[in-house]
Length: 501
Image (cartoon, rainbow, N blue to C red; front, side, top):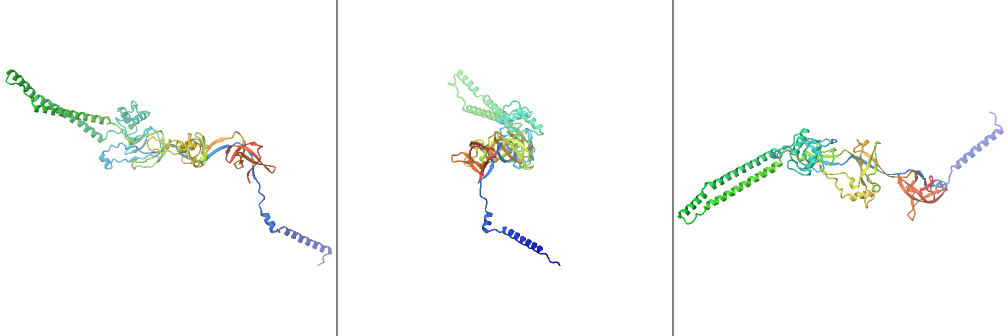
């Protein structure tokens, strides 16, 4: 092998030196003192957090969650028994027990004159009216409930005659025709009624017979005894012949008999009068009737059978279910601070979870918005309407004074259900617009608003690394932003305002 030249040996030595020097420099740059390491981990010097002023339109809304429901819920039950016609003994033996023979069906839309259900094979019919059904209606009955029945019959095409409020033969005939059109027979006098009528008629006949007998006996006693004739003859004979010095005295026994006969006659007449009065009174209420359990009056029809709590074979006593209006409404609750901004009549946008939309209107706030809990089959309005008026007024201006953030009930009417028609019990987003800016305005985050010692609002604006105060008036706020107008200094779009340190 040839030896390396001196020049080549020198070049190799210089290369080694350069490499060693570069490695030492690199290693040196990676070495830090403990002080340098601690300084490298310290946070940078704190400074203000700023955001830019924006110019945009601003719309203030109240947003809540609600539930779609059918309006005006009310419990349903019967006001009395249907016309089974069973005798008292049969009812006592359980044969006349009120049993549902065809149960109502949930979801059914009920119109005036419709059959809600059947009990013991008898119909339970729906009519429109504000007076509750609380008694059987029949001949001799009078009142507002009778007038209400007469008007309903006329609306259904069965003329009862005059709308007088007195249940007469015209009303009875209209009821008979109405039942027949539904495939049923109107309730005629029961076996007990027929038996009682027969007894009263028999009592009148017996009283007439007694009076006739008594009258005949009295007449026979007065003319058949000959007392008055004999006395007069004796008096005339004694006067003419001079045999007797004075007329003879009346027979005491005859006078007593006459008085007894007169008392008997009066008693017989009184008995007949009483029998006739009892018969007339009974006949006045005898005829075709509407049993208390066969009609339910609703303040407004049609209604919807929302829930049914009975089935065929159950007894008809107690709650039967719930009916509602066919219209939809939304029930929601908002914090009291939001309720201060709401008023009846405000427009509402409703949105389902799958994007369906509908329009509504705020119809009630506070106590007035609570769901109805009226008594079945009558026309009582929601309890607390009067007593809750003060609370409602408070709801219109906010929650109670004791707790401004307490939830306030909200009811929203939906005149045109639209896409919500099949969304009963669905959850919806409730959006109520309470105000809007007049075009585009300067807006800043709410966190940027500061209050000076004099109570005035101000902003801290950063310009060229320096902070300065700009006094403003605050306007509409929405979605964490608030409208501002400068009252001292200048403020323009893109200025930086401090929202934190």
